[in-house]
Image (cartoon, rainbow, N blue to C red; front, side, top):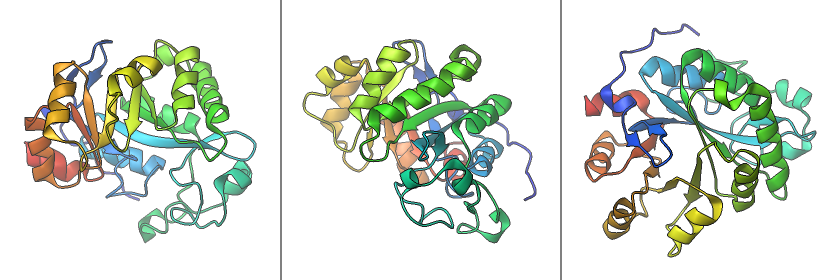
Length: 265
């Protein structure tokens, strides 16, 4: 694949404000890299987000059979690789043999599933902030969180680009809080719970991430009044992106990084 030079950074790419822990968040975060322009959760997708002007990327992490953290969203392999079956049933060596790009476009034939360590190295090389979503396979919540934290500790969190850990799995957030209390955490939910303030306190989360289709104006106002940075997924209409940011949302996740940035320029 021919690599494009990075585009000039839009002011919206990296200035969404600073949270209570001093974490500076962007307005736009590339979802699974830049999932509209490259196969999601691959090195190619991370590089594509950077080339398009993103300041941060989000990606999903789960474990191979022997416990190696890799980038993958689904519990099964079929949708985004040439493999079949559950991710948790396959070794890293077996997953490395799969094609994680050909399903997206012929130009990405042979793209491999990256390890978390490889993704961190790529983000460090490019200077990309990271929203690392711990997305465990069923029954592997704490195991996945510990494996992720092992990799982060081995790479030195202080030497990494800005980092935010998030998860729908509360056990993962609890492990992250215990193992890496200084790394900011984001509370992920498909719908805003009534006791959101207690939940944020329980897991020491400094941001709240939820579905842009399900947040209501009154809920957003309450979160803003409490000083909680709100990050919404997954917004692919540039007009919707602009509207949400005008309403005071801190950041949006988008597959269409280039279109979203262009719509804000």
